[in-house]
Image 1 (tube, one colour):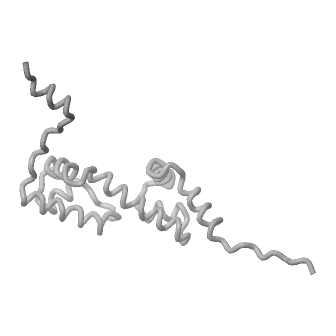
Image 2 (tube, rainbow, N blue to C red):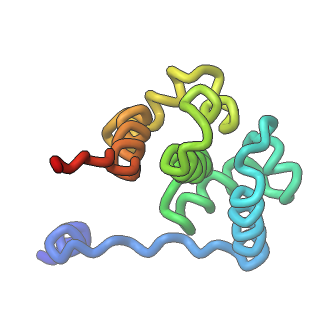
Image 3 (spheres, one colour):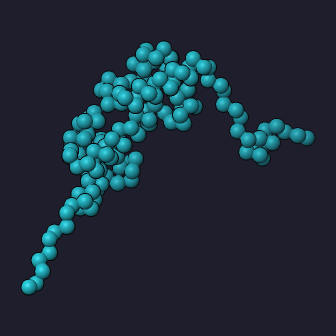
Length: 143
């Protein structure tokens, strides 16, 4: 006897994701564009985004994940970590200043988030960048 569930499992067919209404789709793209510009805003929250873009929390969270394959929080986290990496490589701010700039409650929280994202602490990237791009010491030639 033919079993539709077994057929789906056998052929590794995923059920189609529910369609997102066009109005919600537009709002979700607006949310993403807003986050790209305002991810450092201290009062950023799901409730604020819902009010601003006319979505309920369920539609925002589920729609964002379905459309962009990540949560709202993980998208903001990724933007912050990219910025942190750029600032570390530029060498104009130390780790404490970067943590403050990115609105982390403490440098330890920032360092943990950075390590979870990249697999090494921010100080390691800063030290590597400093050593790699530092001018080589002049060597004296024997005369």
